[in-house]
Amino acid sequence: MLLQLSDVDISYNDNVIVKGVNLELDSGERLSIVGESGSGKTTVIRAILGVLPRAGKVTNGKIIYDGKNILEFTPKEWKKVRGKEISMIFQDSGNMMNPVQKIGDQFIEYITTQEDTDKKSAYEKAVKMLSLTNLPNPENVMNSYTFELSGGMRQRVGIAMAITFEPKLLLADEPTSALDVTTQAQIVKELMKITKSSMIIVTHNIGVAAALGDKLMVMQGGKVVEYGKTTEVIENPKAEYTKTLLSAVPEIGGKRYA
Amino acid sequence: MPDENTENIMEIKNLTKKFFLDGDKVLTACDNINLSIPRGKTFGIVGESGCGKSTLLKAIMNIDPATEGEIIFNGRDIVKLKGEELRQNYRHIQLVFQDPTAAFNPKMKVKDIVTEPLINFNLIKKSEVNEKARELLKQTELPEDFAERYPHNMSGGQRQRVAIARALALEPEIIACDEATSALDVSVQDTIIKLLVKLQKEKGFTYIFICHDLALVSLFAHKMAVMYLGNIVEKIDGDKLQYAKHPYTRALLNSVFSIDSGKNKEVKVLEGEIPSPLNIPVGCPFQNRCAYKKEICAKEKPKLEEIEPNHSVACFFPINN
Ligand SMILES: Nc1ncnc2c1ncn2[C@@H]1O[C@H](COP(=O)(O)OP(=O)(O)OP(=O)(O)O)[C@@H](O)[C@H]1O
Ligand SMILES: Nc1ncnc2c1ncn2[C@@H]1O[C@H](COP(=O)(O)OP(=O)(O)OP(=O)(O)O)[C@@H](O)[C@H]1O
Ligand code: SF4
Ligand SMILES: [Mg+2]
Ligand SMILES: [Mg+2]
Image (cartoon, rainbow over all chains, first blue to last red; front, side, top):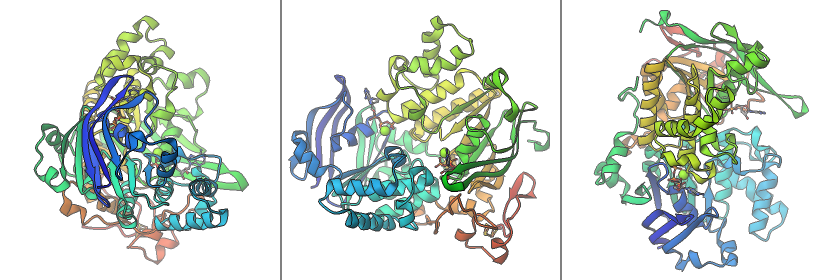
């Protein structure tokens, strides 16, 4: 087992927000998390990466990664793991990047801070990663600023960075919700093809969750209300909330609003 | 709906937006856009990331004015408005930004964010802020005590609802929503869309709704435009989207993931890359990714032409099904 959360509670300013989360993830396994807005999805995956906002705190339970409780990690242990063994794709990778520094310089800096290597091999590695995500003309992308790339291209840069060190665990918070559906399909298929990492994908798009996840977890009000094999949860939902959610998924040609 | 009789609240005519970058480079984000927005209806816009949707809205909102063209709103060209007239005009058009996090002042409490437009136009007194804010939050399914929070202490979807509440506050004639529901779970999304529809019926609001979720926008919008590389390539009624004829619109439809795992296997990935808007090809903007391309497509740019009532396509070889 790569990751195990048992009875995890998380609070912001002493208010318990996430309660009693349990989950297990094997090597190479992919889990999708869907659920109510504000139910704690982002909070859970931030806790796994140890990057909760200052007001946030894990107040109960264990997060065991590769046999060790990450809640007891020293800064030195985090330095070894974060960004390398466990990495994260943010909703808008473009916002996380520096607008006045070229993509290439940022990518090279990211590689050289994680790994003892020279600039030239870092450059080559970055180009290789960019081409893996199907970005055309990666040298040109390296030489661009974020605003010169479309949302989909920026998001692929974010994905390329996140998988550079072949993380054992990839966390993705709404990786495709800012993208049009053709780019989304491209990225979903690329993610499945190019990495063997375990993944946790948070998304509001249940179709994407179903396409990516072996397992599906449904959250509501800080609690896990359903958790199981994706096909089983979708074909045979047990929790009322899961049923509500599934029935609200819009489908082309479905019931009109107006 | 007899369409020729529907009055248009806004006419966008020959709107072009260019960005002039370093080194004499010109980026054409919107290329000669023409749109008629029917009053009291919902107009949906879809298209690939970076095709110019937000740029178009920013031009309408005069945040980043158009390089060329006219925007006729209630009979006047708002591109030409200045000073107080311009300011008063924006009582009637509100925008829900794509990224509310970047649009909010992080030092303001939620109650002040949602009521700020009302205060700016002297429509309520400071003493009324608390009550009005709670009413607006309730409308968008947020707990009333969120009034005292700061935006960074909320989830993504909660912030998005604050942005919607703020846009509704002024009861404007047009509400332009830029990906306003993408951070919401489908159940809250359903509630918010129902609220918008209810308000439209009661108060006659017009919506311009940019959205990557094709299914959602087609079920909500009366009319839709599909954009690609700064151009409108197809205009179609929302309830007819599945009968679209432009190869790009078809590619969009083929890319949608479904909760039906069988259907997901059929999802096709559109090959090739979007050309750079710095370097728009001669001819059809979609040619390098189009499976139906013929010689003429690289030479001439197809015009947006009506092929049946209320349905226009910019393609030499529209797909018939
Ligand atoms: N910094 C913070 N301080 C206080 N409360 C917070 C903070 N960040 C989030 N919260 C609250 O914690 C709850 C869970 O937030 P979280 O961001 O994890 O939700 P989410 O499931 O990711 O929602 P969404 O789908 O809307 O992004 C929300 O009710 C939110 O208001
Ligand atoms: N201030 C700016 N300076 C230079 N180029 C810009 C600027 N704003 C937008 N662009 C460019 O204009 C094009 C259209 O961008 P826009 O934000 O309108 O796209 P969009 O359709 O809203 O995409 P998305 O779906 O990703 O939000 C892009 O190529 C973008 O890089
Ligand atoms: S005009 Fe030609 S290249 Fe363009 S969409 Fe139609 S068939 Fe394809
Ligand atoms: Mg979130
Ligand atoms: Mg946009």
